[in-house]
Image (cartoon, rainbow, N blue to C red; front, side, top):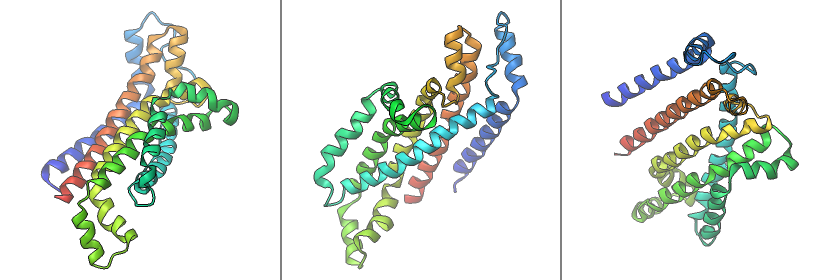
Length: 247
């Protein structure tokens, strides 16, 4: 690890620690928001503490992102294999449709089947975050030199061994870039889960819009923005490390 990378990881660690401290101390938010919005009778959303809301938000993002990574990478790998190459246009069209179809509409369709709360929100986030991972997986694997694959076969590796020992490691940085985009999208989109009782940082935002309370909105929006920045920086650091390792 280079000196620049070590410094970057140290800064990121300090940022994570500062974020954890900030969401664990509600008096900071109450003091700041009370000063900025002294006309409001209440500046802290009463449903739950900020720490609980962040953990609920992370649960939504973690479950949906895990599903998206597993299905998205699997589809991308299959679409680059000889048996799945002919299905590439169909896979691209389906994942593109999931990105363009509004998450609120997916919720409206999913609630009658899955009920309120976690499940329909995860379904909406899963479909919405699928496209970047599928496309980056396909792009990364297609960019691997055919000569390197041929050398791997010449050394006696099977198709599976070549995939996991040669192709995936070389395409890893591109795949991680797709994962980064998908997770950042999901952190913002997960706000809609509050509409159907899934909780998370969307709860104070929805309450703030309904009650015309800007303090509530900031209480939900600012931590979500911080969370998105931290996730983006974490995955960018991993992506850069993979590129450096590959070089």
